[in-house]
Image (cartoon, rainbow, N blue to C red; front, side):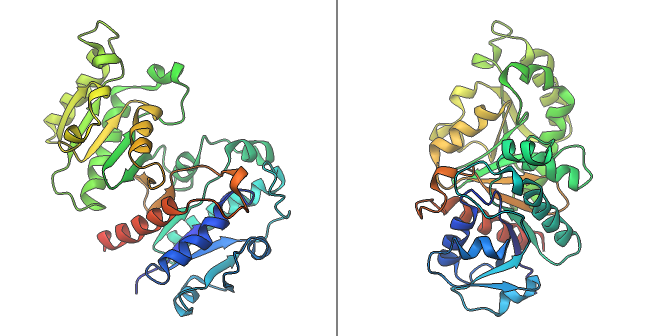
Amino acid sequence: MNLPIALTCGDPNGIGIDISFKAKSALKNKIPFFLIADINHVKIRNFNQKFIEINNPNDCFKLDDDTLPVLHHDFPETPTLNGFQPGNALETTKVIERAVGMVKNNEIGSICTNPINKKVLKDGCNFKYPGHTEFLAKLANLDKSVMMLVCDKLRVVPITIHVALNDVSKFLTEKLIIETVRTTNQSLIDDFGIINPRIAISGLNPHAGENGTFGDEEIHVIQPAVQILKNEGLNIIGPLSADTMFHSEARKQYDVAICMYHDQALIPIKTIDFYGGVNMTLGLPFIRTSPDHGTAFELAGTRKANPMSLINALELAHNTANERL
């Protein structure tokens, strides 16, 4: 039987519950998923749409297509909808841990995570991770995982993720580039069915350094890593100038663009598809996707939040699980 997706609630003061209702309304029973949240939070946030508390993941197969299934998780505080509420921080992380435990026990097929707020988690429970990606790697007993952003027209992977721009060169190593590209290449094969992935890798500096004129990371770090990967048989080109990699003709030449830092990767995909992009974590022993946006505290409870990224994230989680079968 096709296993359902566990959708975590994210920050209770954010738009997670709102867009979960909208995703259910859009997807009906096309994709089986349930929300892990405090049922009392759901009661005060529903849009006159049906929801029901379930006892186990398989209960979501027994419902009509307009009912949002909710697996209850107790939170200590009622959301204020006024933004920061550190009192719910610990249970927000426990919901993520609960979903990971369920996927490890084969109760679910994949995880989709609604947005969290790192400042709230840090203040509320001393959360030590820059984001979901790093926290999930820890829960999977891994040193690191890889963040891929996906839309219909582009896939991008940042080598360094939640790192200050001033520190990117300190973290950028030949080893990190090689490991990230290997993980990405394998995911394109396993999760997207691409037999021989075409990989384009950017430079760090303007014009990819222009032979050392604007920096030497390309010469001493990126080019050696690319050559090792080529010797392994990977279909990879670069380092390329980042400012020429993302126009429509350039995108036809590769299946994924590997970039050196966060904004170098995320600006193009958010420009191309601001509302529809999906965050997917690669290298984990389970499937995890997420909408590619934040908690949007200012929209919580207004019914104005756009659910398209979450809808796409649920579809990607579902399709990836089927690809792995």
